[in-house]
Length: 492
Image (cartoon, rainbow, N blue to C red):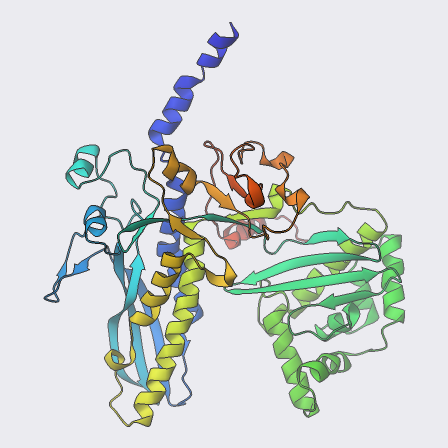
């Protein structure tokens, strides 16, 4: 009877796998990178201003074309199929075209769509020639109809990007040690990740650290620098619970700085020592805007919002000290994010594009210094992008000192490439004990396989996604926020 009840599920599971591809999440992630994230990266660097002041470059639309090959006689040929790239030991990649406008003294000198390099294309993604083909057409193209794609072809070798498990950005985490409570957030904006930490010592004083901040900077000094001018403004930023109220009064009493200018000067003396006061104040404001909680914004009008966010973080730290809230569990899967192929390619392209811009500035400076004619064709070097992407994909050495991100796809049997595509790698050091990070956590249920993990130093750090687990692609929070505002949800 029990066996009969269980057999009823098989048609359902059968239907699920018949209509879904096991590499679908990787393909969706890569498609999102090509269609959306590429444009965002270009928009971040839309205007390039080299050292020679009268010259400026404005960037327009970016597009990646379907893979093609340039033969020995210089003629491009399409379609260039994955089977051919494997046979000829070539990279399955499409050209990246970027609209560029060169201006000198605000007068347009040159404008064209130019090739800036090549982008490896994921097999079965929207830009792949195999996308949308039926089994007969796939066989005619030299492919296995059951192959699920989701990998790249670099110099003829099949390479798969291993999913990276990282701590969630922009989420406040509370931890406690013997002598202090810490509220920490990894604030992310583009390529920049800034760790902001608020510490409550046993004496009740609150300190804050962020990239480029002075050591032992008191929280209320920073809050005054952000625009909360009076003590009552600071008091109103915190809830009215008696424990928090007491801590706020204690900190106000022990903060000698009483106005915005003094507070900015306290930071300015650290970031611009020995400079005149006007420069110190301006530099302090620049540091606060750029490096403190960049995910909220990097403009002067975001300072008050940052002050209230810091107050929320401090409230959580004080509540933890008085045992009003539990400590946050870093191993809970709600506090983790998985970076799939699209996100990893985004990190790599952003780094390569930054280098391309640096090379562009150098070429402009050199051309002008040598008094040669300045046009887009002479200053663009396509290898600047292609070389960096190709090197990372070939060696597996990624941005942020990650190693083993790209690996050869194992084709020993049908299941080997499948496990490669669904492996999840933690960035933690494999030579340390880290018992809690290696343990099976309750939130792994239905998401990660508790059995499929290697023996030895990688045990518990390299995991496998369950066959029915799906990873959603990143979505824009602005749409959700505007929807909540339309529904009259109050933001506290």
